[in-house]
Image: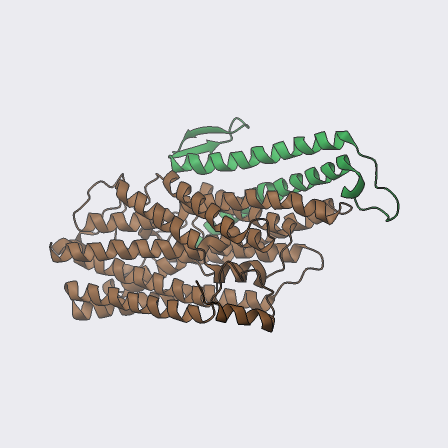
Amino acid sequence: MSDNLGFALEGAWKVLFAGLVLGAGLPLLFALGIRSLAWGAGGEAEVHESGVTGPKAQPIGTVLAFVLFAIVVLGIALGITFVVASGFGKALSFEHIYPTIVPKH
Amino acid sequence: MTESTVILALVVITALGFDFTNGFHDTANAMATSIATNALRPKVAVALSGLLNLIGAFLSVEVALTVTNAVVKIQNSDGTPKETLTAGGGEALLIIVLAGLVGGIIWNLLTWLLGLPSSSSHALFGGLIGASIAGLGWAGVNWNGNGTKLDGVVGKVILPALMSPVIAGVIAAAGTWLIYKVVTGVAQRFTDNGFRWGQIGSASLVSLAHGTNDAQKTMGVITLALIASGDWTDTKNIPFWVKVSCALAIALGTYLGGWRIIRTLGKGLVEIAPPQGMAAESASAAVILASSHLGFALSTTHVATGSILGSGVGKPGAQVRWRVAGRMVSAWLITLPAAAIVGAVMWYIGDLIGGLGGAIVIFLLLLAAAGYMYLRSRREPVGHHNVNDEWDGVPAEEQVPVTAGGTK
């Protein structure tokens, strides 16, 4: 019982950490992307006083938004690669910082 | 055809039946939030989830033959069945597996009838534990593992069940809180449209992961039965027809959609807005993938429920129906023992009658229970047409067409 509890707690921290980075971090980037997109679109996309026209459109915001969305898509692609790789007996390794597919040990 | 071949056929059919209930019980985990926020129309959501489960099931080529080892001692560590159980065509093992599967299915159907998202893996493990206790005694259960890694009923079932919803909830709450901080000042119509896309993406990832994780369990159980009866010998591979039939069973089940459970998860716990839905599904996907990467067993249901609760806690001013959450948690707590009791009773009945007759009686009892619960569900049908109705009280004028128009 106590052995199991130790292993479980040890694992729980890792899952919590990875989960916060991927499960809350990627949505945060996505939200920033939405925000930039709205900034880029200007006008009715942003909350503004009624009666006046909305803020001016900022094209740089649109560019920034798509950069952020691209990062999120890469994150999801990494997730799918992981599912597929582990299905075929491979694992993702982060030892070179960028992910590589290696045989599962 | 010998007696044990017929029992084997019953085990395979029952296992596929379990896989099917596993599918429709868990549609909600991936799709409840997308359906609740209208990111996807209900029919489209279950079709997408079913398709991704099918693909996911084929991606899981890893051998899951030792799945029962986590909780019961009916297999050796290399996946072959214990020799003491395989005498006479493997009947002893087949009856334990059959009784266990029946326990799992009956509990899955009952919780579906009540609209409670309980864990299908707990139901399966519970049934197997009960049948093993009945058939082999208390020593037939792997309670604690051997102390070298996370294992046994405690390590693979109880501890993950306690921890995973909390972890998923914390992540979803953090994600929701951050998202709402970031998008203040952006018009709601604009954010909702954007986050619906995020929701669809993250929910798809959960569906795919579900197919790879859960279909494997049934594949492992069927292959174990085939080895026990001597119809398969390779412990490194799973027969192709087993993989195909399990993948189809879980995908069809998912496509059928457990609308009652979708309704509870999507509308009952929290009124979900698209940003919350995306935070919840991302948290679920991240926890499921991180855990399986690290080799931890967990239940998708527990993770998804924890995430949805977390998204309610994280949104300022959101209402969480804690009474609904309380009902769910109590269902989780009794899932394992309840399925175990059904599994054990089934084993005793099968053993009392003995042999093929026993197996057939268990199977007929399953059919009777399933038929009864299906008929009960028809009294208050929940389907794609009314899955998103307001949780607190359906307006009277809406109740009339539901009963008058039939249920087709």
